[in-house]
Amino acid sequence: MSDAVAGDYTLIEDDAAFADLLDRLDSQDRYAIDTEFHRERTYFPHVALVQIADRHGVALVDSLQVDLAPFARILDSDATAVMHAARQDMEVLERSTGTVPARLVDTQIAAGFLGYTSPSLATLLERELKVRAPKADRLTDWLRRPLTPNQLDYAASDVAHLLELFDTLWSRLEARGRDVWALDACEELRTEPRGPRDPDDAWRRIKELRHLRGSTLAVAQAVAGWREERAIETDQTPRFVLSDLGVVSVASATPSSVDELRSLRGIDGRSIRGGMGDELLAVVAAAAGTRPRRTPAPTAPELPGELRPAVPLISAWVSQLSRELELETSMLATRSDLEDLLRGVPGARLTHGWRAELVGEPIRRLLAGEAALAFDRRQGLVLEDRGVGNGQTDNSQADNS
Image (cartoon, rainbow, N blue to C red; front, side, top):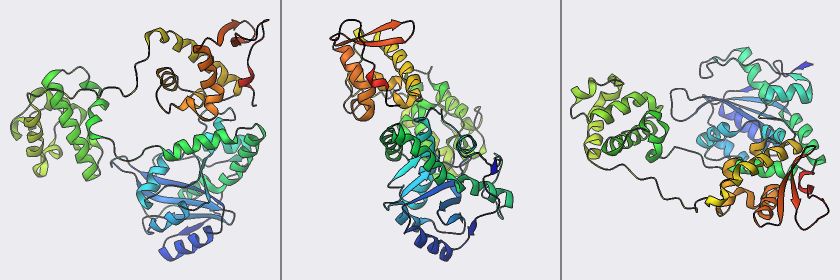
């Protein structure tokens, strides 16, 4: 087994060198990319390093010294970005360049269609390429300069073999006829909503507020929303603006002065400095005596009562099918996906694409009485076509492997 990387990279620390890299990438049809960032005490991720690999080698871009905005032209191009576990990296790229890759392949998603369950990059490198990645140091401060050789080696290893890994996984996906499935799943990730959370929903993430009622809940909703807005404006984590306990204390006590605020549990000096105390009191005063916001009416119909008993049975069948297909169950269909299908939600995930063929259509036939689920000791749950007869069953949807 070989090591992933050992000092084989170029460190880019100025805009001119970055421009040269971009010119080189212009001629590539694919590139690997990863980012190192911090967001422990900030609302938004702060990028510290961007790792890029193409057929010419690995480049480490110091984003504390280089303007990443010009990279948008590569992201917007027809070249395919190869990434691993890309969800947070997509947010980083969108914030630093204003866009995300126009074409994306995520090797973690690709591996999920080959029987892996949310594998780490290190796991895939070892199992697929016999390459040993350096161990990560979770306490690494990527914003501190200069970066050490060990840090740079580790960062480079994240992309050094990513294109080779992509080739290996993709050839297996194509052989099993699953490349289109993987592309669809990667596109779902690429186009999912990102950005700041809705302040109106902020209170739902505080467990201690769930037992509140009436005006007290109304104040809690307002304070949690104010906290989220302040966090976005000042780029701080919401709990750094005001702790969860502070939100509960303010909602329960409805203080009317800064001195009352200061006496509450969960309130410290940073929560009321620079006029924030008066701002918070104004939020409390406006919400006091009001009714809590109602949960928006569902846009989709309720799950019919007669179909509720079917959900556990169908879920069990889907779990069995995922095992037969060597797919992570959540990639095939989540419980929410199943309920959306049964409720008739427009555009439900199981109504189009490969999931409709594997899961959506069989369930439709089941609900229409065209098929039935039976238990077989050897096969488990079997979807039987009621129109076939003579004990024949329809398991054709579980092949493709």
